[in-house]
Length: 497
Ligand code: NAD
Image (tube, rainbow, N blue to C red):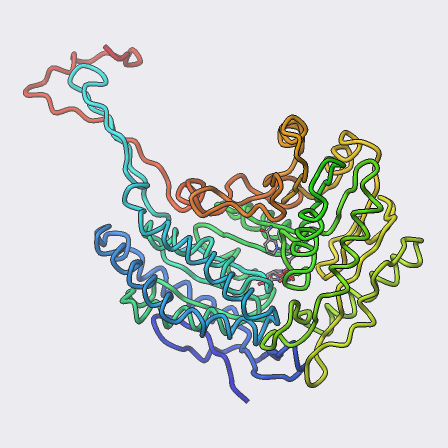
């Protein structure tokens, strides 16, 4: 059985942890590898490697640093298909979707190639008589990136291109369910010429995460995962005095007004509800039909949902399996709970016949209508291909529903009424808003992040927020008098003149 090791100081590292986890191909249910789970000592070795590499990397010129990023980009462009295949083999999403994930991660590399412009400080000549002021942004040191299973490539790439370009060193702890992509990326960095120790990978679960959160040399933590773990990460790492951004779960609403193009809305509800089997933090899980459009909208979504092909992501399918047997059990139990609570199951994914061999973790796309706020299928993040339709009389009722939800990652409105869309975007308490766009993931030069229980910390990912998160500011006030013209001894607080 293949053993997936850690990556420390530019090479594979076997680790001292006694435990190992199974890595599964979700489309077949086969165990394809074992992943070593890091001990505290393994985390110590990874952080030590990042700490030792930091001074030299931080003082490497911007020209040299960015040249390595450009090389990484070129290598990734040449070999993106290999990485997409790795994602599909461990996550299960269809190959074209995996390729899309790689492309969105690559956008952040391209953004980070321009870091020199983003790190430019400001300079003020003669702020006071003979006194100049300038600002600098410096890297932090070793930073930890802890990823979720659902985007093995894109989510770590929200952070590490910017962090590396800014002069930091990295310890990446990917989800133990999808460990291979991180190792492939580590080798690509080596091939691109990144010095040893700048990019390290440790595998594992809670023990490895907690060792990173408490390690005194780790300066900042970027975490992405479920809300309870994000809360734990934020509380633990900030109590240790670290900078933290902890992205949590989501429950994203798509509001459809009666004047919307209902065919467009139905297409997009299906794409955003069932893409990646609903295992996206920006998936639409609730479609809020306003006024009298509900019956027509549900009929259109139903027709499209029934036509979806579920199966092995390497075949000609629209939707792959869930990531694990546990996820499958969880999603099926939510479908049971929705029925028991009185929601109307319009399409039952439990009946799906997947195009796959073996015992993969499949459930087909499921559509519920007449869902109400008290039901668990509305209240909880299901993280599977279950789309709920709720019916409300007016836009303000829809806004009240969205704003009362404890999550605030993404939302969308579908309408042809600009005034209604503007009212929605200005009133909704959610971090990322789409207007006739169902999954409004911002481009790399803007920043990604939700509100409420979807993000703990005040910095979003990539864009200028990312640059600020991975650097700290310094302001220098200087003068070079020809002789002692400082005014002599004077205990009064200095005024600028
Ligand atoms: P998860 O919280 O189970 O795991 C995330 C990471 O935390 C993994 O690396 C895991 O090993 C580690 N971990 C798990 N339990 C831990 C514990 N008790 N203590 C310390 N570390 C622990 O999340 P997941 O199932 O891998 O990912 C799905 C979740 O991530 C969903 O809730 C989804 O909405 C969320 N997500 C959010 C965003 C966002 O941008 N807000 C993006 C992607 C995924």
